[in-house]
Every structure is written in C-alpha cells, then in structure tokens.
Length: 387
Ligand code: SF4
Image 1 (cartoon, helix red, strand yellow):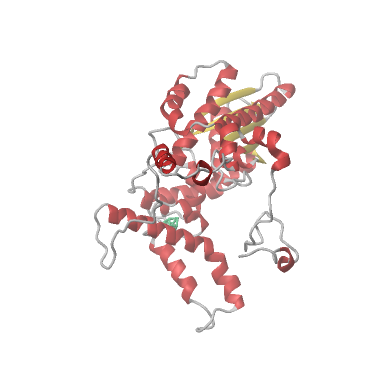
Image 2: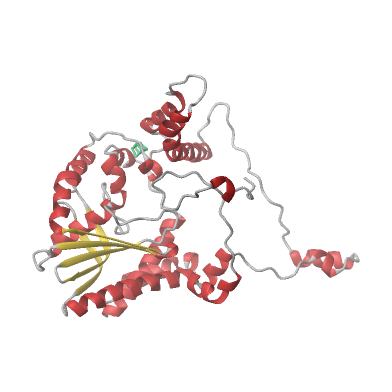
C-alpha cells in the first residue's frame, strides 16, 4: 500500500507493468490520477486491517481512526468487518506460529520501506511484516475481488520483501523470505517463499536494470495483459498497433484460419478488449469536457422510469377502486450479493447454505493456463445451456 498523498514513479503495485513495458511510467506520469470508489473502499478496508493489528500490539491507531472516520459512511459494510477480521486472524495465526518457534518473533504493521537501492525514488508501505527463525514474511491484504492475485514470483511482493530485507537484515539473521497475499473476498490465500540470496539475485539481474530503464525516460513500449490498468492505454500507439495487427496479419487474406485463430487472434482478446474499453472511456470523458469529435455527439443513455412517491401512487390507485394485491407485490428477498454484504459472507453461508444452488456456469473459452478445470465433453456439459 502506498502512503496517501505520495506517489512513487515506479510504484511496486505497478511493477508487473513497468517491468514489461518500461515506457509506461513516464508516459503515465502526466496523466492525472482521478482515484476511484474501489480505491477508496480499499483504503478503508486497509485502515481497518491496520487498526485491528495495532490494537492487538497495543500501539496508537490515530491515523487509522482518522481514515475510517472519513470513509466509513460511504463504504463500510458488514462484509468489510468480516474480511478485515479474517485478515487479522490469518496474520495473528502466523505470528503465533512464529512465536512458538522463536519467542522474540516480531510483528510490524504498516511498515514504511525504502527501495532506492534497486529502484530510483522507490518507496512503499508493507501491510504487515513478521520476522522469526531466519525467515522474513511480508503479508499483503488485497480487498479487490476482480483479479485473483498470486504471490508466486509476484514482482510487487518481491519488491516489498527486498525493502524489508534491506531494513531488517542488519538486526536479524534472515535467510528465507516468504510472501503472502490475503484476498479474503475470493478466499485467496497465496504464499511464495524463496531464499534471501535468490531474491537479491533477482533484484540485481532483473529488477534494477528494468527500473533504471523505466526511470530514465528511454523505456520501450511493450503491449500485453499488463496494459489493463495503464493510464495511457486509450492513446497508446503501440497497443493500438498490436490490436490492429491482430486483425490484419493473417496468412489467408480472406478468412481467418484455425491456426491464425489459435496463434494470433485468441491470445490477444484480453488486450483488444482493454484497448477498446480504454478508448471508449477516454473519448467520452474528453467529449464531456468539451472536446468535439467530428461526426459524434453525446446522447443520454437508456434510463428506467421511476415512481417518485410510491405511497401517493398507491393511495391514488386505491381511491380509484383497484385492489391492493393487484398493484403491490409480496415482500421480496434481496440478492445473495446484497445479503452477503449485509451480514457477511461466512455468516450468510452458515445460515443459508442449504438453500443455495449454484448452477453450471456459461461456457467460456479460456487459455490452458486458466486455473479452472477443462470440461472433457464440452458439447454434453453445455447442451442444456442457452448461449
Ligand atoms: S498501454 Fe501498454 S504498451 Fe502502452 S504504455 Fe501502457 S503498458 Fe505500455
């Protein structure tokens, strides 16, 4: 998590992007960060996580309380309490296990880290750090649920681990580094461990050269799935060129062959969707701020009619002789998502598990690397499903 109000040009959270596309940070630098409701929601959840752990350690929680007070009314839910509590339990279980081996094990919360040995102007904040028995563990809480994040060879986690190693290896004997991601909204607990030696070798061989290239302003554009959260994806020519090439560079000039579909088109679906969504969003924002695109205008989207005063309408219908059961409907249960938000996912499952059915999902084409198991007889599995 980055310190609020401060922003590193080469932020650890964007490392996967700038280690692949070293041009991105300097191109993104001039684009204003407009923030988002998701980011604010994440900030509130992180504040709860830090507060829980700090309370356990008996250290002041003034900063967290200020953040919570600011965002509580807008984003707090029962579900958030449950997930931040899950994080606390996982961290404390790890800490207790560490203490059982090493009585002087350390738990540190919201640790400010310096990465400048490997990344120019690099800094960041680790959610939690445990040091015990020759092992340094970095724990990162993720409140998002859109993308399942793996700790395996994760550059963001490795950067945090390097910063923590630099900060504590003078005081403690550290020979192993464990990186843990806790993403409770999708039951994801991902761990990855390497030796301190391998971590440092990676930093010198891979991280440092890429960081220097990205910081220098002489980086190279390289489109790929990491473009998804790039701030210049809407206007990036390298991304546009890749997408257009996908549509044009085929062996058969008239029809796309099965081979071209496998090797050229399908691997680029996510990248093309990213590009199109970026353009659409950017062009609309520009038009709304007064830019005129020849041949285009802003129109109102579809909207749904709404009764402004239901009680007055019910009274009118009753006065005009309609029976109440003809214009009202019985009490309706909220959606599963709403109910989980209201009372927490775990509690909802405890109470209602016997009444939840999860039908077969709609078939989706996914790359072999996708974690979901393949269906052996796709035609049979999906023959009842209407596409
Ligand atoms: S959109 Fe992709 S290729 Fe373009 S600058 Fe961003 S990360 Fe690099």
